[in-house]
Length: 224
Image (cartoon, rainbow, N blue to C red; front, side, top):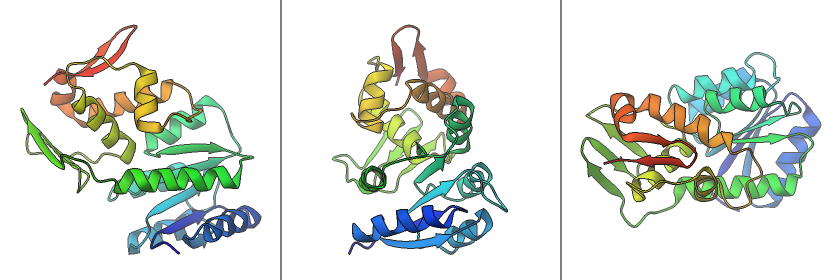
């Protein structure tokens, strides 16, 4: 048994039971709810290490729930949906999710995605805190400060910024960023990188506009 607790929020009881049973068999603790408001209440109380949320739920849908969570927490969030359209995925990433999984899905693979996200969120880096020209990154605390301000970044946005920082001045392709941040076995669209870069640049404000560069036809780079 691990010390990690996974929140599962879906209005389909059989889906909640299926995911919960697989996670508990893998050693995780689970908390199971069937609407967005109950999920938000549990996250606010604390003790949740990762949330798996469905889009279509009563009370708060998955998008609204994620936006509410992002007001106060960088909790890793995996969104589930029977809807595989690009709009739904982009809406999810814009809200602040870390992963998007389309139904039907393999519960065993979902457990591996949970494991990978949890490892990412707790990984210890060689250089835990760095500061350069107004940008300060604390990798242990998973916080960023830009000219004294503290933008709220999702886990993926934080890892994306760290990857660009570690390769400052070097152009990284979408494929390289996908592999580094999402993993070599990620099956999503490269446009995921574009949407995350756009949000990251916005959250970094003037610093992002000045230092996070798009190199058209090639990729992205951070200029320090």
